[in-house]
Image (cartoon, rainbow, N blue to C red; front, side):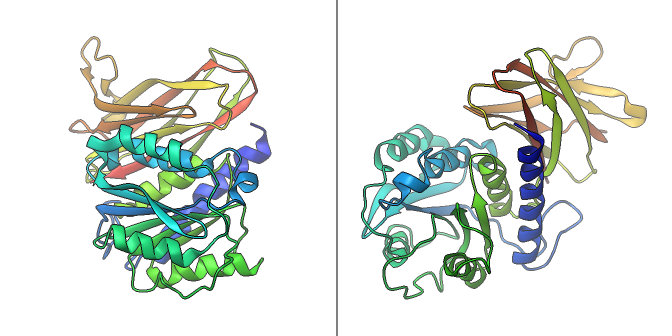
Length: 332
């Protein structure tokens, strides 16, 4: 990944944070949550599967993005359903708890999302989403933006909607972008424009934070990795109110591979309180892990007295020089 792509990843994460703060009433609270925001525990995904997606989404970012959301450890107790739409709409999988239905959800996405549903009628997607999941308290709407049917604003009255624009620019650049921004504004969600392979994971990590009313993740860019064995690290301050921290390591090239080689909880004067191995006088960190083709994620339970988290990354395979992005989300 070159410097331009890395800069775009960091900029995208900053923009997502700004969108979250602006779109959810109340502003940021001291404990890392959004004041006045009610966490969403029942989410419905609405996926554009029209014929145009065969060209606009050849890499199947729609499916991959939702897989990132499904695999996020902090989402495992949430309910998720999904519909696909084009000229008409159909159920991809019915609403169910993610932790118990993860493998079935991913299998359904891989078998049903294939860009074979004709034109693009937003209304069909929103109507089917309501029919399938009337109690949803958030939606994720993924599209390339070009609505072909009559647009009758069937999103209105629905839950807050996080709109992912694949290859669609910011509001003001074209009518499609303006319409997507309108959907986000009128439901209390936000619009994420210009999402591509490089910004897909930061986008869905930020959506994961937003549905739980958490502030947008803090982003750390690594060094440029050029060969296996190289390392890079960073440190994040942890306030007393934080109970857990989600660390998600992202990269863009699927032929590369990276991992967390070290994570340490630091106390006063940077004393190491706990780490991944727990050797010597240190305690062993309590963590949960998840992973995908281009990300590694861990959730760390904060030991008593922790003031900082220090982490180090290691390149285990590098075929194309690349910088990584690590996002840290703090949870109460």
